[in-house]
Amino acid sequence: MRATKRPETKRLYSIKEASIYLGRSTWSVREMLWAGKIPYIKDGKRIFIDIVDMEAWIEKNKKRF
Image (cartoon, rainbow, N blue to C red; front, side, top):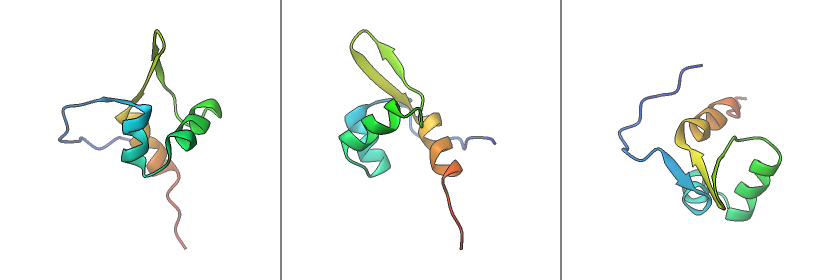
């Protein structure tokens, strides 16, 4: 599966930013990370989520009737 090229220049998102992007609560995004649903990058105490991984999760979880 190939990720789509995005016009944004930002690639790494904080948990708060990722929650806005995904339309979920920050707690929900944390639970997704703990469950291994989306990989993350840890820099010291800070956690970042790659937009490519968020896009891949969205594509993987799309459902059709």
